[in-house]
Image (tube, rainbow over all chains, first blue to last red; front, side, top):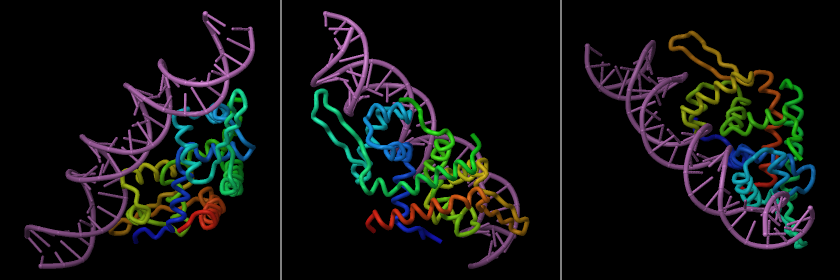
Amino acid sequence: MDKSICPRFEKAMSILSQRWTGLIIYQLLGGPQRFCSLESSIGVSGRVLSERLKDLENEGIVKREVFPETPVRIEYSLTDKGVALEPLMRDIEKWSQSWLQA
Amino acid sequence: MDKSICPRFEKAMSILSQRWTGLIIYQLLGGPQRFCSLESSIGVSGRVLSERLKDLENEGIVKREVFPETPVRIEYSLTDKGVALEPLMRDIEKWSQSWLQA
DNA sequence: TTAGTAACTTACTTTATGTAAGTAATTATA
DNA sequence: TATAATTACTTACATAAAGTAAGTTACTAA
């Protein structure tokens, strides 16, 4: 038995099983967020957050928008592809409520 | 804004975002499996598979059973807690079908 | 002028993962 | 009978990923 797993499923897993991506997406379900608020709410280092947001942008899951105000404001939000992950996030929420103790 | 995320959700994410755990659980949804068949179907190294299976056993998600035949047979399967992750896996499947190209 | 915030990047350290070989028990093959 | 193979691992070592802390650029507030 060798490599019977669907490559699309594997790809999805490789994205979602990256450390922090799940929490980033979950946070963005609550609406657009700035770099520093993601950093502090999730507890990820700036170095890795920067990397992850670029990856997620390349995957078309996260969208980065620059608002040229003074001072400039940069917001990260979910694309449709990203929002489509909501049911999955809700399942994790449900599972954690049912099976993990607080 | 600091650490507003539910600790149970975070815990769930920390389990599921470990490399390979998702694929291991997904494979075990198809029924009990032996070490070497997981190793080859997933493509994970024995070193890490061994580590992951122990972690998942400690979390109560996977159960290890020894059948004292000759030669001895060892099977890994999902507990109820593990099977409860099925809807989540199906959502990942659905998402990957809808949003990732083959 | 000094300090502070936002959004990063860079250099360096620690942790995680991969690779390859080794082990112990058993079975199949020449 | 000796050799090779399989299963379920572990160990030692190398590489890749993540964390830590400091630095950068642009602007703003005291």
